[in-house]
Image (cartoon, rainbow, N blue to C red; front, side):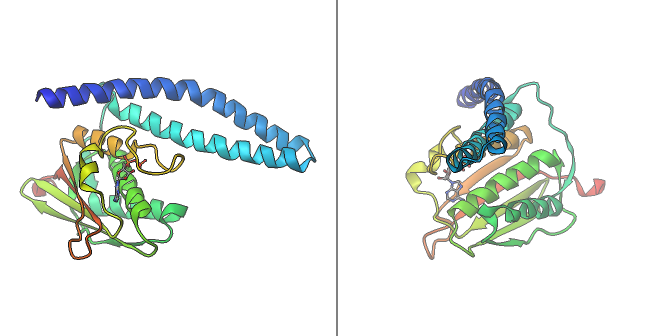
Length: 239
Ligand code: ADP
């Protein structure tokens, strides 16, 4: 319990820090983007045009990082209220797959939604969507082109267990303990912020759920990652 409290306090303080940083950085970055946009309209010089374009690209990159900080800070807050509504897992996964497959990262993967219909959990649709988008993004980043990402789910007593399996690189055993650490990433700067799984962890905690990341999951080929999430299910009587 002491470990857990320390972990939660650490997350909360990182959340406060993240909110501060995001706020301080967000406004000037928006300013810089506007100025770069002006340059593009007011010049004929190819060098200035090209530089304006590159400044805009870089500010977009910073904005993405700031956005994930804001999301992370938001779920880490103690006073933050999570909705507890019935959420249909099939619909949630379908929407997450749709969002991810529209993005350049996820365009070249194959997805299989094996979740049965009418399986509901108690939770916050937007936050649950965020979990699956983050997990799918990670699976895409680790996967070869046309790799299969499959998601299944089943009810077990009062719980719903959701499994996401990919055919990607897998996760070395020595990194397993660090996955949920905020800012832990093995990706290139600009590609990863290391906040994805930390955010997933926060959201699952708020849903009284549990997450395990098992890798290598695909023992035969010694690769792939299996993510197992447990969430409180909606009693069948309330369906
Ligand atoms: P980010 O995606 O920004 O790196 P995350 O917190 O989402 O941050 O993930 C942390 C790290 O966990 C990744 O950098 C990667 O090394 C590892 N990881 C997460 N999911 C997978 C996966 N499905 N396959 C392989 N590695 C993964």
